[in-house]
Image (cartoon, rainbow, N blue to C red; front, top):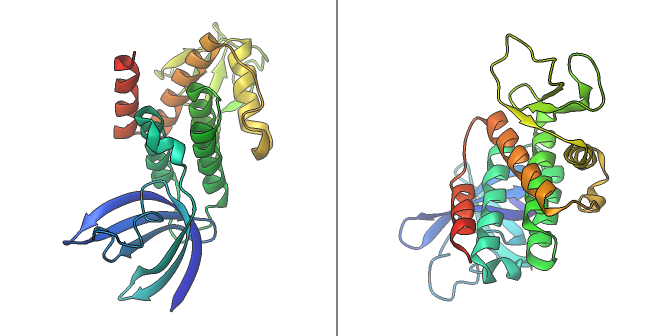
Length: 250
């Protein structure tokens, strides 16, 4: 049985001497685990389309309950990522998150579209990395079913609350703290709240069409990162590496 898919390589794991096991995020089939025979051989024709963060077209055949790549062709390799270790680590973080939130054998078009747009923005535009990172984190959380309620304070309904409880995903005024909650609250101001509301509600093609200052982006990035990791109840090695590079890069 043959299957042709377009997908993004989220993970590449060595297998036996010359093979590899890939995780692909596809539009129609969701997350797929596939074998790439001979990928680690010198001059393998699979090298480019089967590298980490490559987007390509793959012809798969099913054998013993596992797909194996028969043919592969590159569509987009995001070359800009591979010229900058900071950009590559950020893209790898996006892939690790997508690997966790995507489902096997279920359509993954929205998450695939999001990560492709974010990878392109990192690789080929001058958009600030913190803006792209915040967009990916918050929009991905929303697509995965963890969209925060940003309509107003979860207790009194005020439209300009002061905090976001990142455990409950609700806004709170300074005086409306739920006494039974011990979740972490992050401060939000009008600029941060406006950016978050825009990210969650805008058209997918306009994800980066908002302006924010450096200080706002820094605070927004800390908030969206903490919110996503709290909701998923885990950290990410690529995120840790990305942040370590920011502290050492002049």
